[in-house]
Image 1 (tube, rainbow, N blue to C red):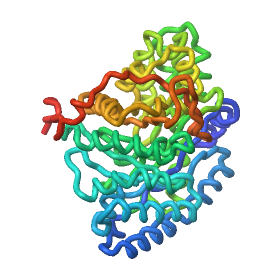
Image 2 (image 1 turned 135 degrees about the vertical axis):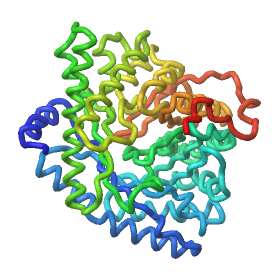
Image 3 (image 1 turned 45 degrees about the horizontal axis):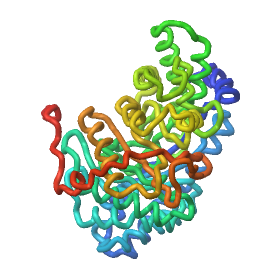
Length: 454
């Protein structure tokens, strides 16, 4: 049981250390909406979402007021639309009508994002999958709240390189379609390896087919809380450092457990998981980079950065897993560039490069996240970056992802402005040597030998 002492202990973290519940995400299955008639499918989807989520925002606001815990976002994840729309959608344009319906439904219930405009193609693509993927640039340019993802690889199946090649083209097309807004559409598109079924964080959230008809997942944050705690153990040994991170992660996750239980009870929806990730924001003092620097780095990107991040990620998981019966999602430390002022400062100082970020993704909870690159970057180079990141996930049996933003009309030395939680980002240089011949090969990279564990 969570007692009032624990609640009161968190008040200090909330008031002075930027602790918040980053999101309550209501997962909604659309499998019972499937219909071969496109108009009927859209009607069923709109009615299912608006009915199931009609009280999500108000319940979240009530919990905020009652417990004094900020809940920054209320969001929805849905069954991957490539599955739900396959029977009715015969073209990319058909899928765009679903995106418009989802955007309208999200606006009706008051959530800021709805995730699940997605396809799962780690081994191969159906025609429906391909149509959905090809519709992404138009869907993201013509809607406000839609988030999209494509899972192109897994440890069990290998990497679908045909999908990787297509995703590189789609990222570039999405950038072009939203170039008037610094290619903002790409900030709502994630390419995954080993995507989890229960991720509450955007832009990669969708409701897996193994999930219930509806489920509540909560994502907690709190980089500022961890940094403040570590300030008290400066100069101490690794054992005390690790214990401090674990204890702090436990307290942060208990807040998420409290909110998840309350939301589940009040909405009459089963509790799924708490994702105990440290998710930064552009606010000063809410930075994963600053935690790493508090551990002992002059700047993120310096030698020792990957080891420090590995330590942080592992201790966050160890502390958080004891605070909730059900921990899932991504869980660990996010390292998005545009959403973390410390990361931005490190890029501007020259200590953090794309290659160092790739090394860091071997031990963080996700991957190359919210990275702005020159708009002239070719589709094949984008596909090559995606392939590298997917290989890290496949071989290391972890979730990895790429949210890359080629900002049309801008180059190294410029800055892209995304606004809100998405922040801003300096344009980072990309290796200009080509990989087109490699990317143009057809088929898939086989699963690694250690995937055979049946």
